[in-house]
Image 1 (spheres, rainbow, N blue to C red):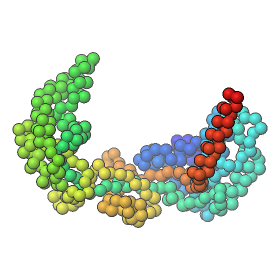
Image 2: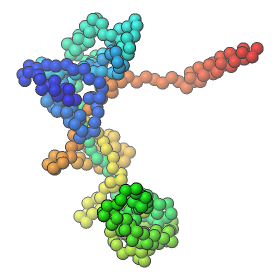
Image 3: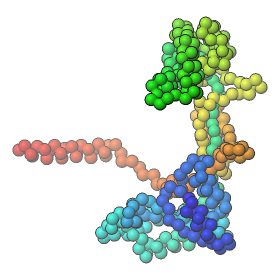
Length: 360
């Protein structure tokens, strides 16, 4: 992407044009907030990309990778403004009579003429697609479900709670082992941490023992019903309410039969463990997208757009990618299983006959 920016920097401010060959990475690499994505977004919003042309593979001596020509312009013709032309020229080439290293194909003069004509015509066809720049800009939404959890003290959930690290602030066996077996001299901070772990070990053991002793199959559908029970179970081990709440969370699992949890204002609390990400085109309304793609499967899901550019470290949730091959994808009907079975049977029969001849 830096090569593209460098080329643009050297272009004439009013009539500059450039073409640069890149591999496929600049089309889609990087997450939403990455530099690559934001450079693509800037290129699109600045209307600097005139066309992207997919070239055939095996064109170069040292590599056979797919390559693309990015055509850049600061002075697009009126009909091209706000648009980007994608040209699939990956099948327009001639085979070399003899390979030269990795170079097996070449773009002959007649091939260049064909590609140039597609570019100049600026008309959609099998090999040419034209889109508005916004087609490739997207927003990243976080989708979560309401917090609905059931609580229980079972052997399985106790192990789940421990593996989630609910008690790691008290005692962490892995870190204790690491500190005790360290070949280097421990810092004062590490010595203090090890002492704290060792001092907390009896409390840790007491909590685990109390939970194991109280194990049952009874399930509670709200924290209000479960916390008094858990507090009583752990009364001999700890009275730390925050720790008890953390343990309760560790003993919970998502359960759509459970009560929907709300905050003090009565607002629904959403379950961060159900967090998922949806990539939505910039020009598409999120409600329309949710109704089509998400709600038929998860009716109570809700989308959140968490972009915040005012922070010291901005949260960026608007990005851009150009998934070129997706726009030229052609579905191919898979071979019917009956035909495949017939082929395999014929092949197996042929192999058996040849093997039999070896022993005749």
